[in-house]
Each structure stands twice: as structure tokens, then as C-alpha cells.
Image (cartoon, rainbow, N blue to C red; front, side, top):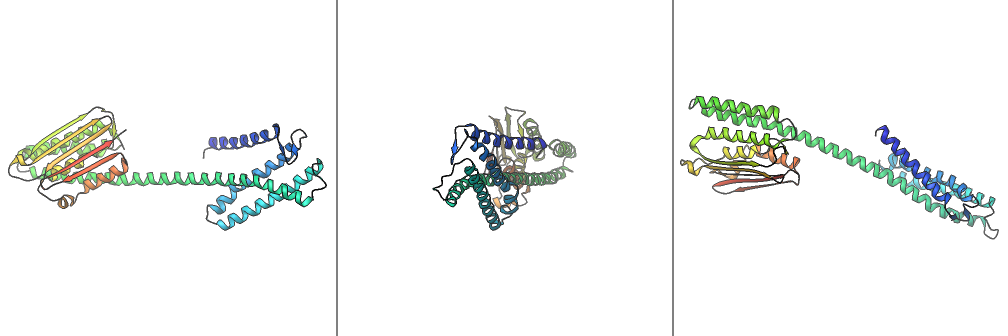
Length: 348
């Protein structure tokens, strides 16, 4: 806690006790015969407030942190009860002496009965201030525990996100090199152009996507370049259709979330002799701060085969859960002849 917050907290407590005292000693109040007209109530409440504050703060600074929080419940309740009874008895005895000085006691009432009556009334207020101190420290500890829990959870998420993101680079590198490898010998010029584009994409992953969130326009430009790279590699063997449209270019999105689904489509597209039977349809639209991705590709493999080595998909699903909890919908449809992914992300 900073010094400024500490000073404000102390000032707040002082104001509470001052207002408490002023309320009791300036109003037209009476308590067990003590009143403000004679000044007896102000005198009694002066030391009474000290006892109340003692019972409150002994909970705050000692009993709760030393025993209750550390699960020493028996000691906590024992010490709390003994202190409460002891303070109440002492204050009740002093009240009786003060009442005698102000001639507030009647001879007909036995002194033990008077002390007992005062004891019961004092006990009521002492229990209230003891409970207040307990709840104050307990809620303070609970809030600190929740804050520590959130910090730990955030650090865990950040560590996991860094690990997941680090996995993307070697995975993407593996697929890119594999793509260039198949072009070498068959079309060296195309292989060189592909390698050049691939290096640009890799540069984006290594440097430009280092932020937690980046402008949507930059991410979609990366996606577009990736699609064009894969289109060069596949050539006339497939029918490719893609649409990318967005309204808010500066909208922030976590990087490298969309590409794995597109990469998966190119990786597992069908291998029919007729190119018309091998199709990929990609649609990316952003409107009203929601981005919708739809990727559909023909396939001739099973869902289990698609999942083999699917680090990219498993990775991005985990990242979505961490980055957009309750703010994304992912639907995967697998049929005998096509595979479709629909993703909606609410970026509000």
C-alpha cells in the first residue's frame, strides 16, 4: 500500500471515530441515566470509545491475522471471548463508579445487580465493535487474497500465452519450408518468389506481432498474404475463393488467431484429380466490432487424421479460451467430403 493510500485510510478511521464521538456527545441522548446536559454521557463515552476502539483494532491487527487467518480458530475464539469479557467488566465497573459520583444509583438496587445491568448493555456495544473489527480485517484479507489470485492467474495466462505463441513460429516455419521444398526443381522461380513472401510473413510473426493486440488491418493483411502464398503453392490444383472485408481498421485483435484455421484448410484439402472438386472458401468479415471467420474446404481424410499433429488448431483454441473467454464462438463441422470452421469473436 502506498503512503498516500495509508494516510487516507488513517484519516478515514480518525474521521469515523470523531464523528462517532460528536454524534453521541452533542445530541439530546441519554444512556443508563447519563446525559449530555450534566456532561456525564460525554465523560463516560470518552473512555468507552477507547474501549470500543481497542476491541475493534485488536481484531484488526492481532487476533484475525495471528489466529483466524492461520486457522487457529480455537485460540481466536478463546482470546476474543476473554478479552471481550474482561474489557466489558472493567468498563462496567468504571461506569458504576461514575454513576455513583453523579448520584445516578438508587439505594434500593443492589450494586451487583447494577453492575450486571450495565455489563449487559456494554457487552452489546462491545460485541458490535468486535464484530466490526473482525469483518473489516477479514474482508481486507479476502480482498488481498482475491487480488493475489487474479495476479497469479494473469501471470499464469500470460506465461501460457507466451508459450503458445512461441509454438506458432516453429510450426509455421515447418509448413513454410515444406511448401518451398515441393516447389524446388519443379518451378525454381516460383520457389524463390514463394520463399521471399514466406520470409515477409515470418518477419511479421517474429517482430510485428510481438504486441498482445495489434490493429485488425495489419493482421488481416498478414492473413491475405498468407492466402496468396498458399494459392501460389497449390496453383491450379484447387479452386480458391476468399473475401476479406472490415469496417474498423484500427480495431485491436490478438495476432495469429485466424491463420491456423486457414492453414488447416490448405493442409487437409482433398486431392481429387479434377481441380473443381478441391475447393477452399474463406470469408472474413468484421462489422459492429465482431469478426466472423468462415473456412470451408473439401477433404478426403477423417476427423481423426485431421487432428494428427494439429498443434496449430489445438494451440489457437487454447489461446481463444484465454484471450476471449465468453466472447467467442467456435463451430467445427466435419462431414465425409468437407470440413468447415466458423469462428465469431466479439472484440468490444
